[in-house]
Length: 245
Image 1 (cartoon, rainbow, N blue to C red):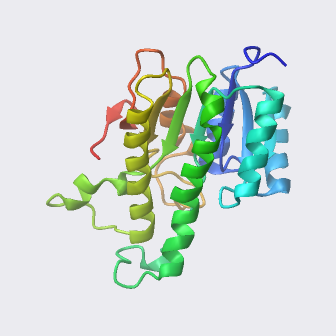
Image 2 (spheres, rainbow, N blue to C red; image 1 turned 90 degrees about the horizontal axis):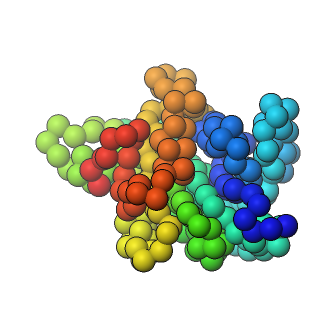
């Protein structure tokens, strides 16, 4: 297959919530979407749903905590497509639970490692493994789904957020640091790297009381994934608004 024949996106955590809706919106723009999920059954079902809507969506199994699955996915994409235009790092978890109001004093090392393995270490490893393919795109775009809860400026400001789930927040602060550093490393290329805050979204993680639908929450990542040549890099956005690190 020609490396230029298809505009290709990979979205992690794509079987539900934000990842599913991000995949749908990108596919509606004529982009072929690889919907990554750690669950074979749920991932295949999600891709089938989008195909039933006439969209070009395919399942690819990736558990970001399993290096062998990351390597296998990278090899498959290279073999089938030769490049990758868009990577949306959406997969994430939160284990702070009922202590999320401020879990800093009691969060366990195991909970911290579990959170960082998905939200940070897996995200970094997958991005690094796919980067050679992204560089082959004429306009590579990397979107790291972060959170306003990762903003140290806002947390440390007077009257800042009282909700401080430490494991989740710290992992997203790490994601933002990765965005800044990777954008700097790629400053001489056509690849753009940005962080997206989707807002408080009604998903399994956000809960039923969240005010935003997945459709609305996905829009920031989709915008950053499809930036033009003059678009920003190394920034943090919610919608069109740039946020403080």
